[in-house]
Image (cartoon, rainbow, N blue to C red; front, side, top):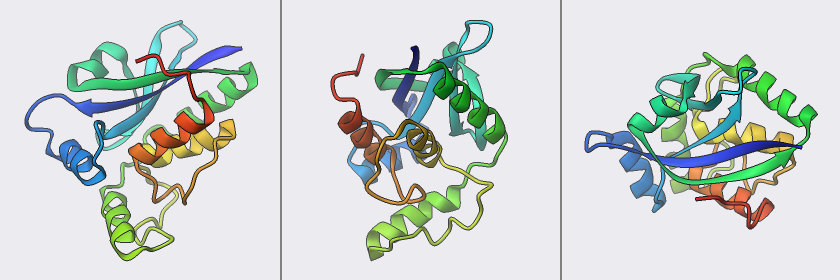
Length: 167
C-alpha cells in the first residue's frame, strides 16, 4: 500500500479575499482542498486546482501562501496511486473556473441540482478536482461534483476514512 494525503487549507495574508469569502459563505475553517503525493523522485508535491489552473506545487511553495488546516492519510494500492497521478497529469493546465464557484452559490440559493455554469469538462475548481479523485477511491458524494464545496468534500472524506486525519 502507498500513502495518499488529502488536505484542506486556507490562504495566508489579509489580501486573500476569494478564499476568505469561500470560508465565510461555507462557514468553514478552510477554503481549499488538494491532494499530496510523492513523485518519482520521492519529492512530495501538491496537486490542486488553484492559481488559475490545475497545477503541481512543492510543499514549501504551497505553504508560503497557504495554511494547512487539516490533512489525512489514506492507504491506496499502487494501481490506485498510478491512476490518481495519471489523472492529475492529464488535468494539469486546465483552467480554474471562477464562474463555477458563482454557480455553486446560485445553485445553493435556488436549490438547483446542477451547476448553471459548469458547461465545460475542461475547467475545474479544487473541490470538483478532489471529487474526481474521490470517485477513483470509492468515496460517495451527496451531490453532483460540480456543486460540491471544500467543506462538503471534507465531510465526505471524514465519513469514508474516519480516524485517518493527521492534523
